[in-house]
Image (cartoon, rainbow, N blue to C red):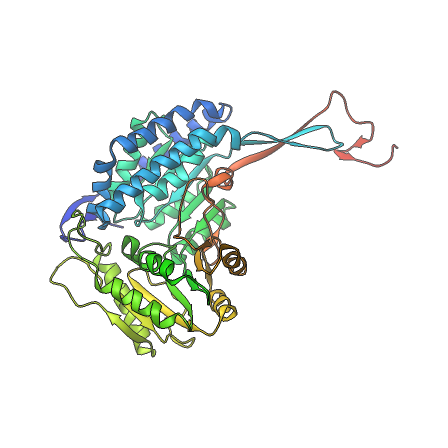
Length: 471
């Protein structure tokens, strides 16, 4: 696997990085394991100052850190700045709440004084994607650092500088050696690390294909794992939706980060009374984007992350059209060598179309017309994925009724999709399993150890079981 920074706006190869040697991988695992043993009985409070300093570092160095993202994967600079600030908020959240979230839970039982204690599980392996290089890492790092789980990680091959910048920030915040170690691994090395007996858990955010490959190895070796995979998220416009609100959000829900977001609204499912109006809204927004230098504040649509990604998306669109879909709108080509994909709106995608239910990772909107809200819910659920979703309805209460009927992990009613440190993030079906962030995220990789104590044995106790009668 070639780890290489290539600017998708200029096509300049900035730097190429060598794969990790077997010796470095072994040293890193040994160092992480030694740190776990040290951390095993240390209180959470001893690690909190590092998270606070890390949050401050991300605030103080927002622009420098953001520029790395823009150079590597083409993200608009203003969006890159937002990603850096969100990372600071996540680190701050767990600095403020980790001790409380990890407090033992008392259990009322006849067995004795019982409590469930949250202890570190061990060294974790993280496999993370390119579309939010810092945020994805902070999501797994901050809560598990608080717990006391050291992490080794493999980042995407196209964002090696981002991986190193994050690792360096953690080091400068005062984390001990072994707390977080970047490894430029080959695919074979990923499997070897996951299988290593020192690894106790695996967290992956990425594609369905990558999730299947890593989960297979993790399952074979009985490693706990969480999978945050792709999505074909629905944006439902109910019959009584306020179209002024819909128009304010719908284009952003598809074009943010050039549409390269797992939780982007990819399928717009619209009742027939709003269908034409929604199409015109999207067309107006898609036609008015300004493609150009992602560092320029006037640019509103960034290039795709790579030439390969652009070609893959074009192949998907071509397949959809060949299968009978209609290109309702395609942006006029622009004079640029950057990896820009022309914003596209597809309609008339029938169930027999090869593109039906497929995730299109870029600025392509699929728009579906339905008769009523019940049909909208049925279409939303007719997917192998279930990550997020948005519902616009005449009232929050009615929107929530619709949301509760959608088979997905997260739904936002009458508002834009948000990822915040206090909100659990995760999906169902082929979108994966497990949750990150929030209270659930910090307990994903803990040893929930049951401790029961008494001053003396229970008279009814025999062979480790509490029996109803004495012998």
